[in-house]
Image (tube, rainbow over all chains, first blue to last red; front, top):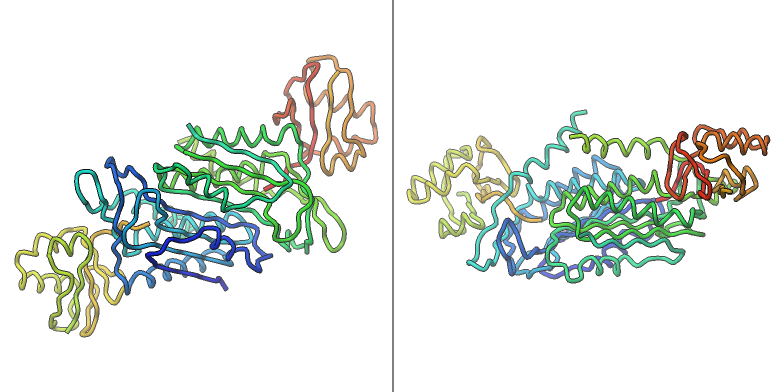
Length: 157
Length: 157
Length: 82
Length: 82
């Protein structure tokens, strides 16, 4: 059984606390991988001073649960932790945290990467950037869609 | 220029401090990936109560520097941090930490995974496990050697 | 009656976050869109954009998915979280 | 003179961590191994194992690498860190 923790919140998160949760009473895992996403000052060629994260409240956690469930069926994971922030954020703020733990590093790396790739394509969040020239919705990138292909190819083997 | 920090030490490391170093004065990066390796209580079918990490002192840092250098030439990274512990460790102890930061998640995931795969194959560390049936040197696994193939294939494209 | 929600840029373009309407259930997502456009002709260009995504009861679906009375439907642009 | 170091299980099997010896430089790694085995016949099985790796001046090398006077050579089992 994979222990899953999923949160969608306006508050910031503490990576040290999240890491402590992954290690707590955990003597079976040899590998923890985490990803942390931050607000960049430059995005798609625009200077950015902040961004607003809108979401679809009743769908967001359900969508993240579904992605975590897929990862837990595909790799032998002890923990999955996903936190995504919503609301107003500034440059360098933390946006998203994904961590997985497993006996071995291949499962931990692949599952963390898989969750981020699917989150980018399927979780109902939208970013509106505060740019020097005015507020603008961020355009979805084709590369995020093609990022899913690597997981589908592997699934067919 | 990639900022590199490489340490080989008996002391434990603090993941929160490492993470803070990666975020410090860093408004250009959107992605941080880190890997943390821990002592498992079961390894290759044996119960383990601890392990001793031997290394080749004058070669260790040079080898990690070389791996970090290769990663920095292959992906656009702002930071690379590698810490590897030596000496006596207990179950659940932290062994190794690798973190990379980049503008985008693909570079951060790939480079962190690349560094761990090469570290496993090229950095001169050896583990002697304290097992219920006596101390025994850990055998190298073929899967760690074949893990390098994915990076060579990509390099040929 | 069904509830239809709009999010992000689509919500701003339509200047509307939510409508309720009666449908001849079951109808598919494309038929629902057509019905909405009939009632709001000036929404046509925005709602019929290729990239507009649809969710029914908080799960992403394709254009042929059948909608039943009481469902919650949502239309929104490609997602950009993470 | 060159310095030759042994590590981990190989060090324990040979019961030796370091030797110094004179070589006819340059000689390759395999020739050096042969010279060592000539001086320590009971090391042959351990040192000639397929999997024993070699480093010269702290860089891994293959069996044909040429060793010069003053080099630091090391032999060790496959690494198991991380």
